[in-house]
Length: 116
Image (cartoon, rainbow, N blue to C red; front, side):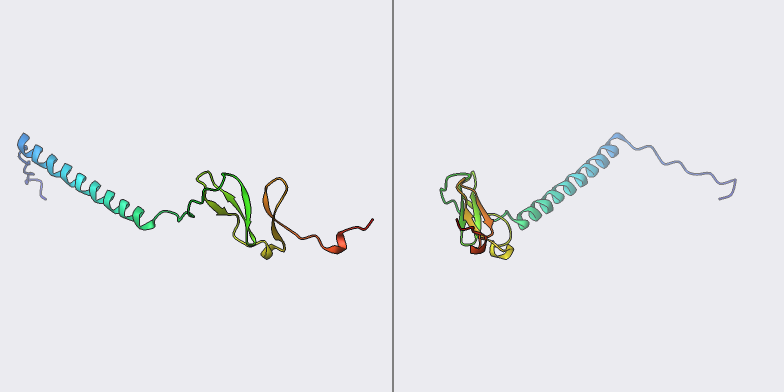
């Protein structure tokens, strides 16, 4: 641009033009927000809920052995398996102690029992 040229000033916008521009901007933001909510909601539904065991009406917080795995009854009366491995996988077997706690324990060998 040479020093003789001047910049043409933009004409001032009327209040109606400003209102229309603000409305378009607001509409665009609302559309974006709704689209984002739809995408997030779809993602949550696609991920699903964890699969819970069926309600068995067990007494909450009691424990038992199911096969070679300890289980505990939840507050919602469902049996939940404890741990990822069987007791045999860690060199033991499942047993319920006198205190009512189910646990994996090593079986006592005959050699460890002292004779009196």
